[in-house]
Length: 473
Image 1 (cartoon, rainbow, N blue to C red):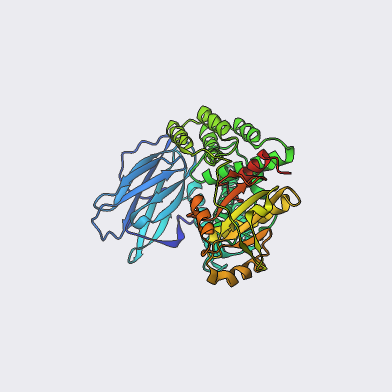
Image 2 (image 1 turned 60 degrees about the vertical axis):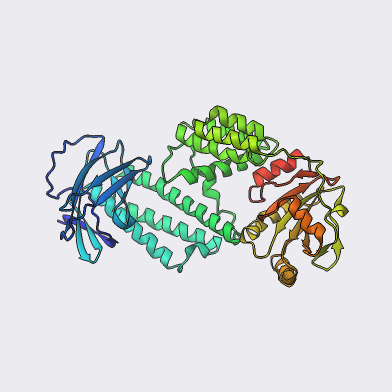
């Protein structure tokens, strides 16, 4: 009968860890149902330096254990339910362990090279089998991701989603094959979903930053819409809860044709866990900091319902420091703007319609990341009383590059380019303090400034709220 299992991937570092039953290390530990006793040793012992090992639970609480001069260590980790614990040792090496209250976790670290160790789990039983699965899980993920090339985040959205679906499917198969406890299998399947969603969030953030977030398959965000938000907050699911809350609220508001604010409140009221509610309520602060029509309404709700006095004090101070929007504020005229066809137009030519002005440049990745969302807005507001105008701030020498990009990316709306020899053009940028791009400005039908720094198209909930407040038809 096999009495230990080797985690097949070597882990580097002069540190030790522990896990599972069977290693002879002396302790006076009395077993309790609300903690895990961990103990371990490094073999052979070549260093007298003390090693500090930390264990961070999913509720973010950390327990540290220091090995003695013989590199043996032991200690108690409070744990009221089975959970993953992140272990960190020398050289910032990390490993996930699955620990069970009332159990003793023992491990033997065998040195097989310079700062290279084999981790041997000792004994038999559920905790050994689960952690063996955790090791195999890491190997499957690494193998699939490596097969896609050096930088998986640069895949197309379709191929990235297919890769994440493949990983999840293979891990679910592994779970069933290992015949682990049904309770663990069910909990792990939920965790696999959260891990998949978290990776989709990271992919979208990266693609947005470098401007490649185009061509998303329609089902890319589907799992967020069915994710159960009435769940305890953990270290791993915080970003998933935030994104799922945003997408579910948008979907329900559009489907039911009701206010987004009301839908958000209804979702929050249906959540039983205070920490989870706090994450959702904090995410609503973005509706406060852009000077939107409902800013005060959101602010009052957050201050009244968020259990975080430091955050509400911060939000109040930021809100009170936002300069008031002056719709009738005069600004330098913007005339003689060159179009892609080498014709000239003036901003004033579009009086009688709202103008949504996008300041961007061909070299700006975050600007290009907004293009898919801008196109979506243009399509939705087609034939309505609004003009979408994009003003490139590229230098004259980049005119050909600008024209090429407009054609290649099939940009819609009115495409214009700056003239830095025209003082009125530079005065216009200076007036709006346009030191960073992308930057979006909304003008009213009589040429007045509605909003000098609107939300970006990627945040369509905020931007559509602004448009709807103006009754753009």
